[in-house]
Length: 138
Image (cartoon, rainbow, N blue to C red):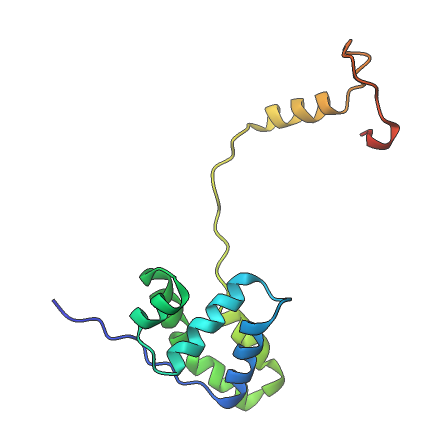
């Protein structure tokens, strides 16, 4: 069985600055902070196992983001050369995930319509002991 070799991550000084900014930021989404820190640690030469232990993450998560960033390395390098002002968005794109469909719908469309219609009814017309608040009308 072939042994897995972690993707080697090499980043420029400007990339490092941006990734450190993302990893320390209090105004960026959590996914971006975590993924940035994974890449920074990988660039320092840490193994996937060390990163997993340092960050208390799963092996799969560390491997996934290390590999994805490694695959984007050429594109990021080219962006930095040709359009340095777009480097930040290229890094953010490399650390973003594709949209997934999510869980299947729980309610049918007819059920949702019935719930909305019921919610918009005046409780008095349904002979319920609630007083309608004019601030919360449909």
